[in-house]
Length: 477
Image 1 (tube, rainbow, N blue to C red):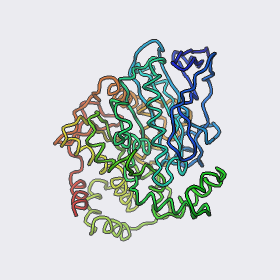
Image 2: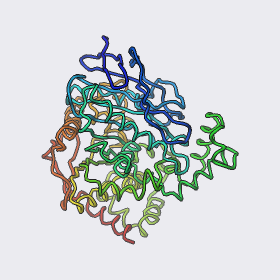
Image 3: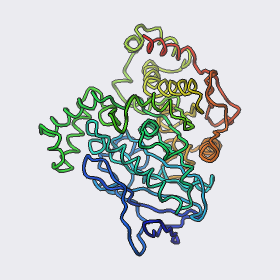
Image 4: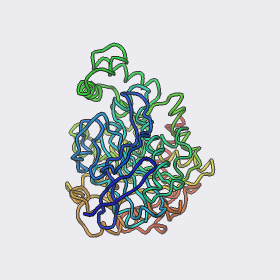
């Protein structure tokens, strides 16, 4: 590989040139004291800084998703606020796509191989930026929202410096999946992020993961107990390993591990319900889910798989007040087991219905919104994963060629057309604010994404309306 160079207002960087893409790794963008909001790194230097090695991951214990996605080989550290830039031409002025990684707000890094930006850059004339932000107790202790401050400062760094890497600071799209998708929603709800991006793509956003202040206070008390201290300030000085151990204890004992560490309503970074605030944000939005999100988490869970029909019907009764919903779901998924029907219901509770409620609200506000439904089923593990959570990432980022992807997606050549379609929609929206299919409106238009679907042609209106009505009755009640 040859070197690539970029001259920024702060100093010069030397990166790598990889088959026509300039890659700059491990660029510090902010500094922070533990639990405090980060501040932009404004240090100026002479000479050339090396940008050929990814920075450390933020402190974490790798989870299932990270092992599945090809865990980053970088070490972890508390000083971890770096980002990576992929550009086809540092002298150009191309649209910018900022990728916010997922991982339940407790895991992940911008350096995970599946998030590499080279293929999107080559296909779409974009500048791609991937970022780290503080995780778990370090980023979301109580209602601190330090992780949100990191994401905002990454966007501020992009505004101030991306032109030096061939990007247009006035044409920035933020994009993420799962907790990254929820981060996109939280950035749309965050007043400090106003004006830092002009488009947003939320893939499978885990919207119920975001917390009320009351839930933040509750998990802070649990964290203090697990760390065996009595005051939040005592957490500042304890060893990072002890804080990680306390975090792990909370995640295994709390009443709701999904919301243990996440963006939290406060009077500053998230000053209200994130869904309502994002729904009123005029920035154009693409939002979507996979059909079988929860299968990733339930397919190999004995506690779920052993459910019989009676137990599954009881789960539906707990959700809807009666078990009629079981038969409604069965109509749409006739080959599902009782356990898979419960998984389908949970998919809608955590992912699909919250996403569609945002789309409905944005339609009422008259705001540009595109929605999709990813339905490609992976054949691996005998097909039990279906169209599960995170399966769409390598298609959206056009990274089917990354090591290990075929172990998750299978290796059929039909995948290529879907990757071309989905990543093409991403680059189109990033450049033109048009995803290539009809916007969400009264018809509730969804673009189907599968190996045999065509963007702009295979549109479904008000998909599974009887399931939607079940949830509407529950929410109204």
